[in-house]
Image (tube, rainbow over the protein chains, first blue to last red):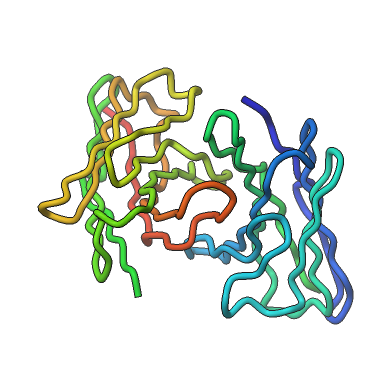
Length: 108
Length: 119
């Protein structure tokens, strides 16, 4: 299987843009999802199929995926966006799912 | 709103089998979706354990070395996880979840149940 690497932590000021990377071999050949997990809560799907937002997810969340890196961008970051974020890849050849190592986003 | 609720023992002894059940509400488990188990050790990241399709087809994380078995009970609208030969490293919050399959991601999660492996 493959591995997905994320930076352990990221700090961002309110109103600024946060970019969270997810790195893996030929990641652009796979589809990526992103999840937000607030403390003590279950994860929530915020991006699927690289750049699609489920119903109810704010437009400030966007995703991209190319080469060996996928990126989750939070525009106009708000205090409520403080959480852990995980990428997830789906390998179409094996039908297996892999989660990234996770990034803790602090808004200060 | 689809609801998933995990249940099972909170404490399992090393070398024994961890058994969890996920009850699904407001949605038929016989619909064409996948039903998954995902775990999260305390203070750590998420790990996909495996998934079962509505017709019984299963997919597992190879890192578990065939210790995991997922089954579905359509008569009770629930699915289950058995993880045998557990060790302390299997201590985690275990989530059950639903996903459409492929690139669509996991759209519904249970609240999670903590399982501790200790003698």
